[in-house]
Amino acid sequence: MSKYWNELTASLVPYVPGEQPKDQRYIKLNTNENPYPPSPKVIAAIKDATNADLRLYPDPNCDQLRDTLADYYRLSKEQIFVGNGSDEILAFAFQAFFSPNKAILFPDITYTFYPVYANLYGLRYETIPTDDEFNIDARRFCIPNGGIIIPNPNAPTARFMMTEQLKIILDANPDQVVLVDEAYIDFGGDTVATWVTEYPNLLVVQTLSKSRSLAGLRVGMAFGHPDLIEGLNRVKNSFNSYTIDRLALAGAVAAIEDRAYFDETNRKVESTIQWTSEALKSIGFRVIESKANFVFISHPLVTAQEIFHTLKGRGILVRHFNKPRIDQYLRVSIGTDDEMDTFISALKDIVSKH
Ligand SMILES: *Cc1c(COP(=O)(O)O)cnc(C)c1O
Image (cartoon, rainbow, N blue to C red; front, side, top):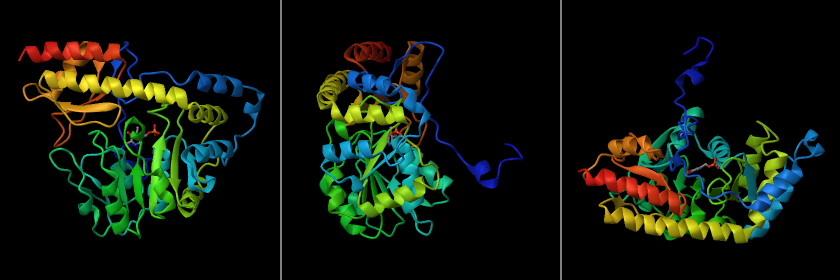
């Protein structure tokens, strides 16, 4: 606390990102980063862009990147916005579209940045309970609200909501923006990106951080009706015209263009998640069915706290959320096959002691 902070700053409860430890090398399964490096073409493109042109501002409209995305997703450039990570786009969307007069709706178990943004922008929110399997019930989102945010697949549960369910929410809320956060969509879920042509109230947000191994580059994208995209641009251009730097622009274009590498790494992640889930079940874990690059697990005999600490002592970091309903769960990002082998062996030891 400082006397120089204004009331808003003093009242904030900031988001706490997963640890990025510097004391030792861990098998890092705690922040849903991709275990594989970015495409070599991305590295080459960034190196190539590391030149004297860095003295110049980047393109504030990100035209080349938006053209590349338009081509890839079969949308028009006017339906596309890019941001410094999808977190930044979420922040702009909260500011641009959600109303302070009515509560925003999102699931009770979800990405913990949503309530943080609501507080930052003075917005009210109401959480809608998920069921015992962490399923989201679309019908419960058909009540008066100031905007809706649905992550699909959800985090940290990894649960995927069938797209017909999203249709129910979109149809019931024509006057509100329904934001679908698809941070993990490339790991086996169906995107609703192309629905933005049909639904003027739909904003779909994606990121290069997970499926394209570029958490360090900070690039996210949003798809929506041109009016929604213009709304995001109004907020962005009232804040910082140059949110995406020259190196990020070059790397992002190369990442989208290299489909073969993207398909190959995603196939590897999906196959690792399959055998890891089976191995976890065979030693007694409850594993929520995952369409993301992480699993959400709990064990009936060993507390999540104990597993977390024992794994950390053995150099394996996972994520534990000390929150109601999920304090007996761990969120484990999918590593390489070798890393997951080590992880499963450690768990076998821990479980066999009970
Ligand atoms: C990782 C994540 C994001 C943020 O991704 P960035 O693009 O790295 O900012 C957004 N939403 C969810 C649900 C996430 O898990």
